[in-house]
Amino acid sequence: MIAILLKIILCSSFLIGFYYLFLEKERTFKFNRIFLLIALVFSYTIPFVKFKIPFEQKSTVQLIFGESVQEFQTVNHTTTQLFNNEQIILMIYAIVSMFLLIKFIYSFAKIKFLKGETRICKNHKVLILDRVVVPFSFINTIFLSRNHLINNEIEERILLHEKCHIDQKHSFDILFLEILKIFSWFNPALFLYKKAMITNHEFLADDYVIQNDFEIKNYQHLILNEIRTSQNYKLTHQFNFNNTKKRFIMMTTKKSRFSTVKKLALLPILAILFILFTEKVNAQNEKSVISEKKSQNETQNAISFKNKSSTKLTNTIISFSKNRIEVSELKVDTIKKKQNVATPPPPPMPSEFAQIPAEFPGGVNTLRQSVANAFDTSIFKGDEGLLKTTVFLSIDELGKIFNIFAEGENQQFNEEAVRALKVANADKVWKPATEDSNPVKTVYKLPLTMQFEGSAVKN
Image 1 (cartoon, one colour):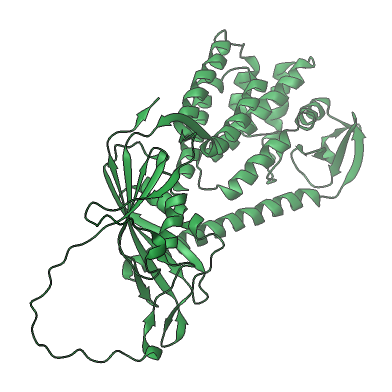
Image 2 (image 1 turned 135 degrees about the horizontal axis):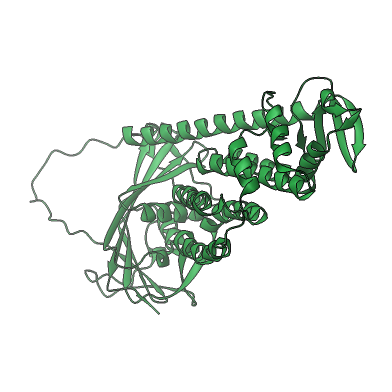
């Protein structure tokens, strides 16, 4: 998820940077508006797009399951710290998002509850307020003070300016951006997008007024007269928008002959961003066939998960090659101690005081088989060498998984291991661990190692 968020921020930042460098000063107002909207949609969707690459896996990939370990009730310091960090980050995110949502609702309600005299001018609803405000528009309504009436008529240039905002539905652009800010306030590029959008909306409205044969200098003088009036209505388009200097310059700027070239330059740029920020998936046209083989250190008898104890935590190797997943067991040789007469061991602890670990439905070997089936080796290039991680599964007293995370040097391997464990545990309820015959929380540690042999070759 972190990788996706970074892609969104980088892609949206690059596109808004392109806008400010090459498009902001061009008199291509309608195109600029479309670009800003498409840039946002593109940035927020492209990281979720999966781009399949033809791929033939010629290397053998070994996924090695280490010995599982469980910790009862208490969690080690590192795990606790990670849990706390995740909770703190989520809490900060939720608080800021909730604050922005409340602020959005308040701003919306503040406008909607304004009271005044309603008129219909040029087929548009106009609300005339008794308070002193700068003319502004929101969705389908124009708001202005009674002192803007001349002989009980609305100043034509003000009406045309706000009419343009309504006809072209500029309010919906701002609402769309504000909703994005609520859920992705951590993206600094959104503030630049809002500034660019509002400025471009004003360019469009100014151009609309000028196109109706109004003299530019008189119109600029009208804008200057409104600057002294202040107000604070968010989500709206205000007649005295503060980018006055830019607006005045744009009113007299002529269309550049390079504007078409700049538009065409967007095509290769979008293509490059598509390649950079989409998720690359190596296409596999044939389904893998699961088979079992013996280890080189074992006898000639084939190993089967069915013949192994479901609670025996042995090391297991699962090898991935083209169209095959091969299962074997990793044996560890031990040297027997010299036979001596020794003091007999103490009697075992009564069963009611023993610690019994949590158990996956069907046993640990079923868990490993499920993880192997869910694990997608095609996302790796094949030249990573040896990858290691440890997956931590927190299991509550009811046998439900409430947190899964991984610790390892390779982030991609960590994320795929967590994803595979989540798939394997989907809708599964473990037999909870017990201590002194009482269900307890445990942290289940599953070491994973992936070994790449040979090379992966693209078609």
